[in-house]
Image 1 (cartoon, rainbow, N blue to C red):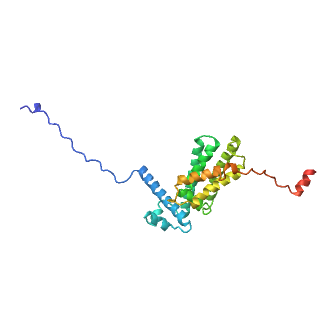
Image 2: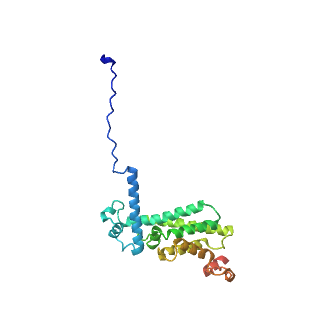
Amino acid sequence: MNQKAVAKTPKTPKKTASAVASPWATAPDREQQREAKRNAVLQAAAQLFNERGFHATSLDDIAARLNVTKPTLYYYVKNKDEILLQCVSQGLQMTLEGIEASRQAGGNAVDQLRACMQVYADIVMQPFGMCLIRVGDEEVPEPSRTELRRMKSEIDHAFRRLVAQGVQEGSLAPCDPKMSAFMIAGALSWIGRWYQPGGEYTPEQVAQQCIATLCDGVLRRSELPKAAPVKRRAAPAAARKASKK
């Protein structure tokens, strides 16, 4: 047989080894996992600060709450001061973002004011917001303390603007926007001090009842006394003499 006429048998391709799945997460996954663990550290810390107070809580307590060792915490935070700063910052940032979302949703001044009050009340019943109220920024060193107080001022001025707008629209009774904003924020902030999770009322019920009381009052409309006219303070004698000249 002519060897040239014999068809060549095709070679069987060699089997290649299947790719081994890496047990190590990709860089984006590692960063996501790290952020989740860091947030868990902050959440646990905020809960303990709220329960025991800042000074009575140690890093060992936070580690024990998370079932990890104390050195593990240093992968995510530097020290207890930084933890407090981040907890308070988160509470403020959540509030500012919620207020801005309420403003973007539109509506008249009263609608926006109620929505902002709802946001504020909801957040002070959460760990970070409660930490903002119960611990505050007094323990945070400068310059971070100044930045936190700037953020607080933004919240205050947001309430003032809405109150002033409501008065201008005629939907709110004439009042001093500054004093009204202080009263609203102060009353809602106090929820963060007395509220206990798992109590008689849900967070939604607490917020609704507090907002209704602040907006509608406790007296029946037929029994509301007439507002007394506001009297200006008498000017000092020296000022009166100067005005006559």
